[in-house]
Image (cartoon, rainbow, N blue to C red):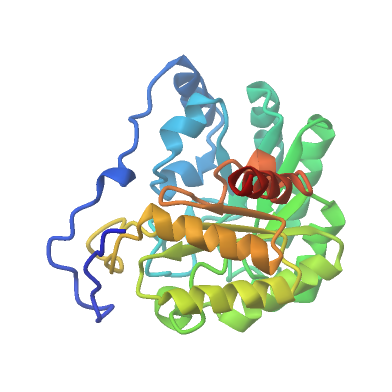
Length: 311
């Protein structure tokens, strides 16, 4: 495994660290991509694919899928890794839930992902819109499975419960990074509060999921420590991917994690007890999310791989 340079200071930009060849992505092309592009524009929808500069946008949109972002595209938080705009959000659009449901219907997708910006200025953190959106999607698309990627709602149980009551198939809340790095990476978030959110969701009967970025200054042992914390609160699905700096104003990449290390962490994750582990340089939270709904699918596949390798 090739050793890559490690930068010790998170606030000092790395000196000319070039992206390795395993981070090359295909440009978005094709008729399916154009069809999704047209639907998003026509229905005035926001997608995290665009706002988050996702490297898999071409692949996912080319397959006729997208991750929708509700509650606008301006976030009240200023996480130092995120490309979504920070500022004063526009008023809540109460027609948005129905537009999202109609777009999913027109796209004829079998599995949809919905996320949102943080709306800390709202008394309920946007929980009412979340509830309305999930219900609208399920009413118009009864055969479509749904993953919701939510914020922490400042840890308010009544707001978390609104999502539980709407009963999506998967509820995800991203830890993003290890405990030591949280105050620098997610300025207004708290590591233990996020764990508590996942714990509350699991106790509410939800299939739970989280995602973390690597290469932002964490140590591998800290990633494993976080994985153990997540297993302790019953988290079912874990995604691990390479952090990519959106602009020069965001945190710099400290190192590019080799695919071999991602593969090792996948093994560790399954060994610790996760039901599904998606781990690779270009993995993002909603990547291959249609498979994350199926209980036992990931672990069974991992066990089959081990049996073949041992055979």
